[in-house]
Image (cartoon, rainbow, N blue to C red):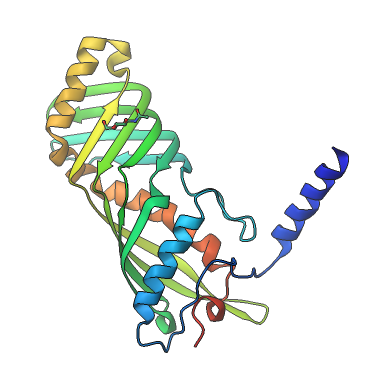
Length: 249
Ligand SMILES: *[C@@H]1O[C@H](CO)[C@@H](O)[C@H](O)[C@H]1NC(C)=O
């Protein structure tokens, strides 16, 4: 028991101290000069994302599916949907089923963009608290929630900067913009109105009949929250693998 514990601590230290990591064995690299560099990158990125379902020890990447968020906060604007939705202990399911449709990289200028679809519904489960108005009706409550996006599409656009560590050059993503599309957004907020089941069921029905208006209002803050979450994940890879490992010239 003792030696296992010591081994774990030592390997954690080693991971923590390593300034650059080796490319995981099954990952592919794509030469920048390749004619089909973007297609190569598309396949490589898809494989990398899928392979990180349970995290990656060598890179120090936490499990991607589910991806855990301590706190996400979403505000609906000042229009007909005016809600403050706070989500806590949130698990996001679906990332490891990513199908990367397209990627375009401009490594010299630290720009990346791409479109991703998913092989299953994109689902967020956790605790919520909500307060506000939905199309004039007051809504308030807290409990468990399920936010589901069917046929979710993410359009990513990342702007990075050069990061030099030792002899290596990395791309650190500074801003990641996420445009989202879905064929249907299903929101289930358990226990609204202090557990009044009739009121809660009615409100959930109402919310889901009006999902397009509601998503429209929540879209900017959902995009922002996803962007920040995905940016942190991407940087776990990008700040550990030098650019000439990811995309040699
Ligand atoms: C979340 O909601 C979706 C859509 O209603 C449903 O298919 C799924 O089973 C739910 N997941 C859980 C864990 O309740």
